[in-house]
Length: 325
Image (cartoon, one colour):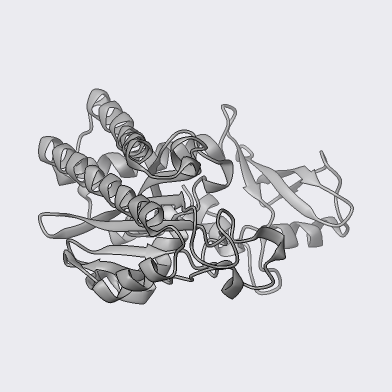
């Protein structure tokens, strides 16, 4: 298990240990969560105003937890929308704090400083509360046909010299706060967009998709309970991470830039990080040169094998624990 997941588990109670998840319940929840994201996508497509959404599918829908971890995301859409929404939640929590969100809040953001998208890719997200507790966020990113700037469509593309020419920059603003519309912000949007009916119609479609997810999550939590749902999400995270990190022969894969402290926590080693920050840097020192793909070295009971490297950099490694002598 990675340090990210270990740190999360240290902060939790023993809830997931107390809950006995039977395989059927786990699989139902495992499939229900992405089903919610996919239903959000269908809702968005059917109600949106511009063909970039309902035909090109230039959007994504997702559920994100309060740590910025992706719980589920719709199938389809464009590839560069995959699993990059969590940074927006982390940024929003820095801005407002966990107590700064309330039922009925709707946040709009497209700022390029976070997630690095062009300004037409506008994100709408809403906090999800169950019995007064903030548990996750529903999010929709969609390509608006216009956000002001030099032209419609893509904000004039390569002709734009800076973000200000591209269009409106919206940085974690509440378009609704506790269910009340921010009329000033709404007028600013309406007065600075060439086709407000289209873009603001798309915004309302995004909001409708988020509200749909809240209803579905209420149904899921009411049926299985908070403890079971959260334990299932933790189990899904752990199983997914285990499948990524290890193959059937007990050989793990790690990035060379993995910090030594993280590596030690995952593998139970005691490598010093005083001279080297990353596991790759430590191994380069052990090799005494840049190793080639396929080369192996044994360090403190671990066999490292270079999976990917070029003439300038070490990228990834496999790690295998050797039997104790």
